[in-house]
Length: 574
Image (tube, rainbow, N blue to C red):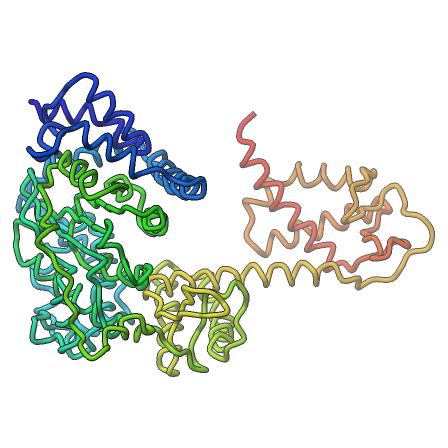
């Protein structure tokens, strides 16, 4: 009961964390020391010591205040994107008081079937499909698939997408030969293990709700190459998931960059680290970032933009000293961290530690057959030209086909790029200093499908321009009252009569087949001409008018029938 009372009292701290110290002041004035706040100060420290330390050490410059407000604004924007019920749900998850989903057999079997259906639609050309061909039993094992469902709150569509990311990341880090093998310590080379042995990744028991506390100390990071650290992280997180209890309850991550544990690599590899984390089916119930430097605090702005809003709602940033951060973590049921027992390890003797700031081996050097994205302009790489040619050949079949046909065409285009020795690469850095990474297969499919739709729009624009080309002879003098002038807003008698005919015969037009519609359009043309009217179009230079051919007149009238039908449908019954 005391915990729930404290949870309700601390709600505004969670939603408006930039007001956290004013709420602390209110707690102090009321001399309340129960629940989350009562257990967060060590016996040798008093609450007023914490307040004094906060006011003395945490004075921010104007620039630091500005950076902090930017992150606070990003957090507020993410919160505002959620409904009240969803915000409350995420708060309960963060504090470990949410209701867990019961894993009944019927429910799990239904979720697994739905997962299979999604995988069937999206797996073509992926590393998942390669793994499935190598060892179907490994990929389709019930326990393996349920692990992904648990990590995604039993959302089958998200689980299927993550399975594709998982195998793509596994292939990228360990090679295709390890796709259908559980990664063990023996699969890490000496440099991978040296990065792991720095102690920057640790497990610190469990929180008050029984969830594993996953500690990260950025100041202990050391690696010869970024790939060493990413492989070590992949192995470490998959070891956590060997526990079924961890799969069910999830983990609470604490990124602790306070004072001597501040990241000395200036955030190098943060994007790749997030990509690895998003590929692992671990359910993260809470994420706490602790830092004593506003610049570290501002790095969180990147994370906010990379992850879904509801995951942002489970994130908290704590800015302050060791004592202040411990104080705040304890309000979330996280016990005292082993800060004094941790010492920095130098895993690379003989000056090799300096290699940790070298460029990542995951940076790819594009070749001529690659399709390149991310420069905010059309790439002239031969691979991009080849892709545009493939789309130009296939877009009409794509446009007229079913959803299944569309998927087959997109997969065929992607496969042809791969068979030509090409990859789909995205630049995640600047144009001047590009950092190329391979795009996820789902993102590639989406882009290719969009290119097919864009090709249709381009064709329509070109057809429209072609229709405006003058193909008749110029008239002498001014238009007559019964002439129909296309492309002009003048309400001539001829145009009024045309509108009358279309309105009167629109239902008849809709009910006819294609051949009979053509005859009806011819009858309308003859009716206009029977009153002495012509079909005219203004000259491009506004110097006069041209009489258009009968074919063009029929095209424009057919379009007028279709436009009238759409307009009437949108207006609905009067």
